[in-house]
Length: 66
Length: 257
Image 1 (spheres, chains in turn blue, yellow):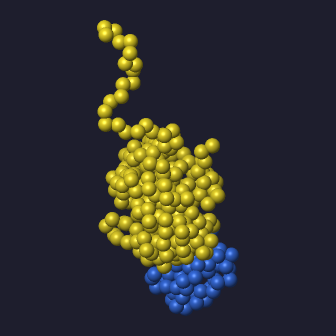
Image 2 (image 1 turned 90 degrees about the vertical axis):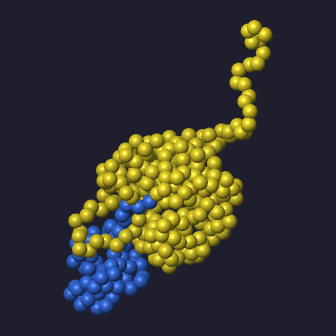
């Protein structure tokens, strides 16, 4: 299936949970925040939230800033 | 005891510093240590999906020593700033935000109308909101009325190093405000930070002045002392300015008179 990941089309086999998506991307879930279809997820919701075809996912972390 | 508290949380230092634009992460770590600051700002950005090799900023910040203040830098609408603040809260597990809503690309001056709107929304959601604002006493009052936990007027444009451009406004803002006033942006060197504190600012927030200095750790240490010196001078109460001299030595008992 194709989702929009951080603004770009991204192919991944699914549906899958946000936790599974992060594992597939090799991203440490403790270091990021995730927005799923414009809703910011609590970290405790990563296992339950299902990403489906056409969904919008934003994965952010902290970078240097002032 | 001269303590510095925002929203009930007490900080050891009145200096708040950024994490951006350092030549390297180890240089940043040294500067943070030298600054004595216990609150640092960070930005919230998309993870680079195609290149996962980059080190995480948080590997270089001891979160047991430094309180992390996520910002909404680069946001041009209230909606984007609110969205970014919510993401920052989940990434950092704190409900504090340095709120920026930028209104102009060249000056990076705030869009104060959108800033006030975003402050209202985030305060309603339980955030501790520290808005980066123009050095405008009326806007600062509106931000305070909207529930801001502090107001953070700019001293000069972000990264400009021009120093405090409108000291009278900073003084008026201090007089008007019941919340802490933190001068955010525009500091170029230590005397600028000391001057901001002498005007009555409760704290100073800076990034480029330290990160862009030739020796960031040395400048961080200079800023630590400048903020302390300025604060002490403010509390000590300076002498009035006079046009003519007043002798420091006795005028009686002079030899030969």
